[in-house]
Length: 351
Ligand SMILES: Cc1ncc(COP(=O)(O)O)c(C=O)c1O
Image 1 (tube, rainbow, N blue to C red):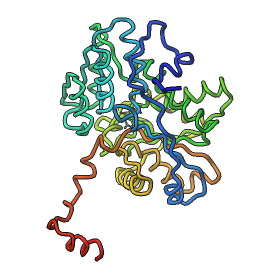
Image 2 (image 1 turned 60 degrees about the vertical axis):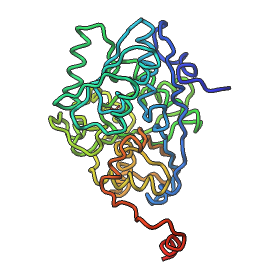
Image 3 (image 1 turned 135 degrees about the vertical axis):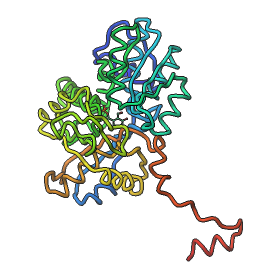
Image 4 (image 1 turned 180 degrees about the vertical axis):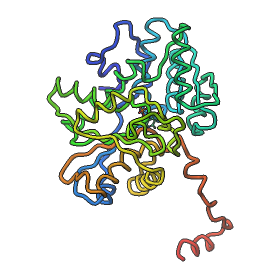
């Protein structure tokens, strides 16, 4: 059967109001890619899979929640959606609003949004507004605004975002036939980890697929859930998870605890190292925040705190590498320049 998007496939098991329309870009259905080279590098014999969410239509997992949130908004005749964003939510909200022919407004922290994300939001026609403040400030502003004005908030506080994002857990179970032993996932505002846990629990109740342990991973400079307090000025090169006051922090902690897992932090250097390894060993290029889960797994293995031997592990890689090309090109020496001369080319590649 032709695939026609998440709501067509999973609507009957999602808690969405009856009025919910179907605004889709045929999101979801992303591959679960075996990563044998990387599991060898990690030094244990186990089945590692990458859930490559960067292959969604706007290049990140946000499309799963956005098809649900925008469809619900359109179904009750909402004409405008708004979000605060570190970039990916903005691009996704803008694309689904464009598809629905309604207005989108996005608030972003000044100078902290990767080029590929901002370009997307602009291309899809959003009204983009920068604020002199953090993501957390932007989120607080859009929450207050939507309490006053008839504009639909499509951040992950919106429950339909979580409903849509649960579908990734369903897909993992559909592909493997069961839940993995361990799920490694980056954590920012904590909507995604909340959604996965809800999705795995629901699928287990329906289909007896089991439950994974969850390893949630934050960046050290933006790790409120590890530190146990909010972070006023979060800092990390992984701009997507540069969040100091996660809206669903409590639920993330609950997910980790209930699953017998944990939330840990990794340094920017650990993120950059894993970013390079995943691309060079597996041909999977993702944006930096996306490898936080894998970097966390590596750290836990190195410290002897997790032994994945014989297990099935899924690492969720949340966004495509093309979202943040500067992270690669900024430290880059220009490629060698030669004359358009075959002999010169041969000399170089054979030297
Ligand atoms: C690429 C990427 N990874 C991870 C996250 C974190 O997801 P969440 O905020 O749901 O924890 C985000 C959020 O913007 C993201 O864009």
